Length: 126
Ligand code: HEM
Image (cartoon, rainbow, N blue to C red; front, top):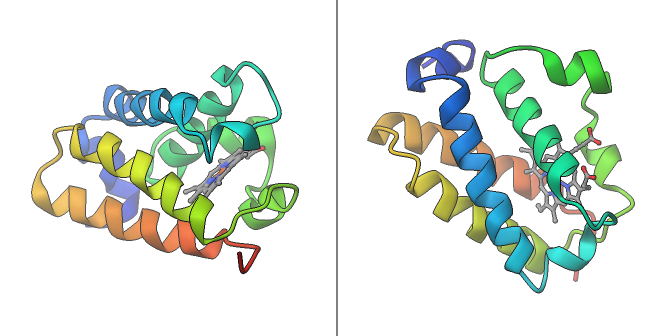
């Protein structure tokens, strides 16, 4: 499916809310990921990821209204993202995506994007 139609096809805001809140529930408990986040309150980081994904998949463009061009690789540069961090991120995201109730085709499309995006965020060999 065209990524621009994905948001509407899967059910819009509630689905993205469910995925991202479940993801951050796990980040809170994750000993690899939790220390990377500079702020005590993960709420604002959760909002930013949710807005970004909604925009990428054809939903509201609130992310760019508030944050400008995503430039995600640059925004991750302050954090060490090696293979261990990438795998931890994907492990948390996998649970969140699997529990979201998407049909197989949409789930596979989302997962393919997330694995690709996570690989492209790696900025350390270790
Ligand atoms: C921000 C970690 C992959 C999207 C952040 C932050 C950290 C982080 C520590 C700062 C928290 C904050 O916003 O205050 C990681 C790690 C990854 C990863 C360890 C492992 C590969 C991804 C991927 C995406 C993504 C694959 C998108 C598909 C975002 C967004 C922000 C963010 C949208 C907020 C950017 C902004 O507007 O400032 N990430 N991230 N991240 N991340 Fe990631």
